Image 1: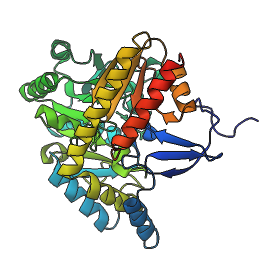
Image 2: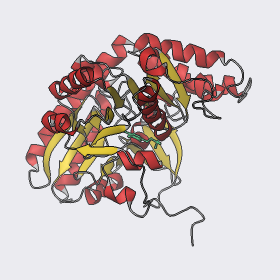
Image 3: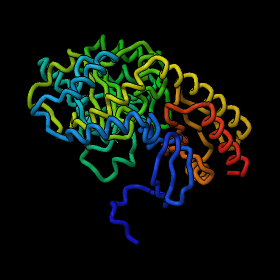
Length: 390
Ligand SMILES: *Cc1c(COP(=O)(O)O)cnc(C)c1O
C-alpha cells in the first residue's frame, strides 16, 4: 500500500496504540520500555495523571482565543519560567524550530535596533541541529538535511564544536551572536565542556555578541538541572526550549533577557497557536512536577546509576560499543558501525532507543521519572541483545 503520508520518515511497521508511565504498547498488546520518549519529549512518561487532568480540565473550558487577548495561563507559565531561569521575557510557540527561529530573529534585530545592522551573521557548530525550517537547516550542521533546498538562509558561519579558538577566529565585525546546544542531541550526545561554554560567554561579552542556546532537547530537567547550561555557571541572552516542556503536548518557548527582548515590539513577531490555553495548561502542569529540587536531584542520581550500568555492560562488548557518553538522563552509546541494527534489535527485545546518524550513537532518553526497576530492565535487555550477537 502506498502511504498517504509524505515519505519523510523511515518508519518501522509497529503501531503504538497506548502509553502508560515508562511503557508503550503496540497494537498486539506488546509492551516496550520507552527510553526514546519521542526524542526527549515525554519527560514525565506517558499519560501522567497530573498532565492528563490539566489537559482535560482545560479542554472543557477553552481551547483557543489568540494572542489578541490576555491569556492568564500563559502569564502564569511565563512568570514561572522567568522565576526559574535567566530570562525576563518569554515568547510561546508550538515547536522547537519555531523557538529557534524566534531566537535567530532576536539576535539579528537586537543589533539592528542598536544601530549596528551590519551585525547579522551567527556562529554555529558542526554537529548542530536546530530544526527543519529554512533557518534551522541553514544553521544546522547536517548536510543531508540541507540537500536540495538551496538557496539557504545566508549568514551562518560554522565552526568545530568545543573549539573556543575556532569560535574566536570566526568572529568578525558582522557577527551578531553565537548559537549552540549545550549538549548536542542529533549530533550524537556531545556535551559542551563547561570551560568552553564559559569561554563562549566571555567572548560574547567582550565582543558585544548575543549568546543563544538551543536547549530544545537537553533542557527541562533532562541533564539534572532545569536547563543544561546551569552547571557551567553561565547564562545565555536568548534560549530555545521545546520537547520536554510540553511533556508530549506541542509547546515551545523562546526565552530572553530584558536587554535582548527589548528590540521585539508589537508586530515584530507572532504565532497563531503560541500560548494556546491547552498548551499552557499542560506546560504549567509539567512545571509543577519538574521544577522541583528533589525531582532534579533524582534525575542526577538515577542518571548516574543508569550511566554506570551502561558503562559496565559496554566494557563487556568492546567490539560493539565504544563508549558511553552524556549527562543526566541524556545518554548515548557510541556504537562501532551504524547504530540502527542494534537499535532495531533492542526494540525487538522490548527496549526503545533513539539512534542518530550523527556520530553513530544510540541515544538513551528515558522518561525523567524512571526508577531503579526501569534501569535494571533496560540493562538486562541491552545485555541480552548484545549477547545475542547484535
Ligand atoms: C528537536 C530539536 C529541534 C526542533 O524541534 P521541533 O519541535 O522538531 O521543531 C531544534 N533543536 C534541537 C536541539 C532539537 O533537538
